[in-house]
Length: 295
Image 1: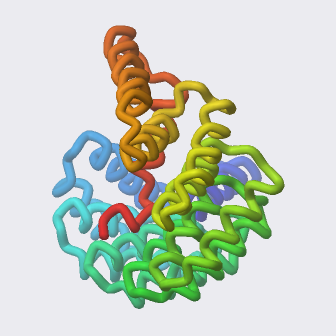
Image 2: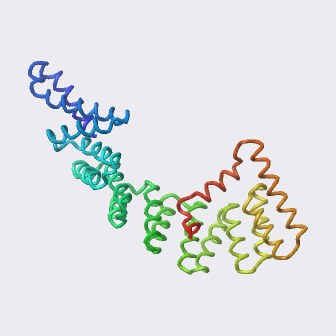
């Protein structure tokens, strides 16, 4: 950040030229830097109005101070002044285009204002500069889905796989997107291709769910059992098995599966801690990428 560079340079000047001469050349910078540091401290203490006044003084005296513009944007956000925050973050980004956080906060502010096109454009620009930051891809996927830009969402998921390799969450998200495009065959192939290379209770259960939806209960049961073989307490697969037995009207096996589910829930509650399976269920159901859960 330029603030740090400025302080370091000021120290060098003080040392090289002597205190008398250096002081006359740098005292204004030191005063402004001091105000900026005080303002950041005030933000941390929740004194937003005080910080905002100090930052206004800094930006008026030194309009090229990118850090002051950034923290001005933070203050505007606290005051729910989204337009003011956008102006400040945009100014900071223009002064230092290489700073990730300036553009990230600008994109966030666009998003808060419901300006999806500007949000997408800003994140796409960030992605070109930081292709290894996977959170940008995920953010873009959700934005594309919000606008029903399914092809762009799939493209972003493919980029994630190319950059970071396959994983179950990306695979299932692609599956969900293809279902939303009414492409069940392609969606199924995504799961099957992953299952040929890796073993995942999550993906196997999705395969079981897909098969059951197509009235292929025998195949579905095989997938659920394979998932349970991999992870004996994987609740979605246990419930999948129960559903197969219910469809077949085999209530003996149905209630046996339900008992396993109930026993697991009781164990989790009594232990007061999350098992890896329960944690995975929570993460899966709360994952922002799985937008199909909302409709």
